[in-house]
Length: 352
Image 1 (cartoon, rainbow, N blue to C red):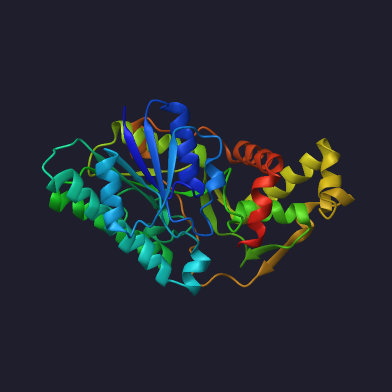
Image 2 (cartoon, one colour):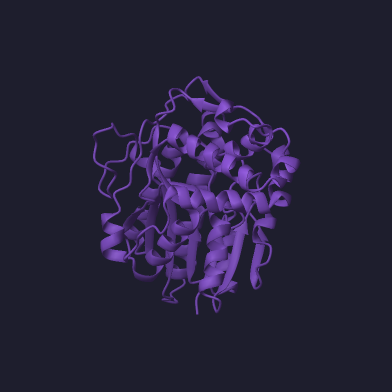
């Protein structure tokens, strides 16, 4: 039996991980530490028994030390982060504070309780990072491997790169048992509607513009959040200490292709379920039109990386990891979840 501390566990990926872990490891205890910013939502953890939510800041080192000691935590899974690139461009200070100083606070607490106290407790500090630390690829460049040089291009990715380096340093300098995973773009249930997929999904339902940066040909590797959780599980179970693993979805798609899939899937849902037209009367699909009519091209994001792609060779070979969904399958499941959980996302529209 393991005792987990999941930071940022009331956010999108963290909450999905808590649901996944509780379902697959029911004998383990899970404590969630989340400061509950706009993107943290206690409702994300509804229906879970035996999961404790502690409202607190990862920068509060003494709080983290207390949790690690009193709850006999042996595994930290660190999701807590500011993660929206647009917000990092307009307000980078919060990203430096949470992603760099916050990660260092956790590492200091883990070192003190797990190492300096002399208990010798077996432990694991798993750090969840992003493929954005590697920079941007040209159309012909090979996909990101774990040995790719870091070249972050936004305040967000630079802050995550710094946190990755701190985790590595605490392993090599102090002997902390750590692993890191760098994932591609996640989507799925509980995602705050500022990110592309839930934003465009909901805009289709409400007949609002679908703002496409630049020419829409920026390429991302899309990863369903449950596949990501499965990958983290594999890292925790068989990942080697001090190692980094890239976790991708194997679905490298330009944004325009993703948006067209969103529109087609929404239109198909309306055709199959006439009741949706009554729930969302402003949707083009409720009025005999296609959702693609909402596409609008806007000025490109500053410093917008052109392409990300994940090379999963190491994770497949060492962990036995493989994504289980195509993008079409994963998005159809995501749309079904959002349509069935309007009570969850409607209050969030005013918070963005």
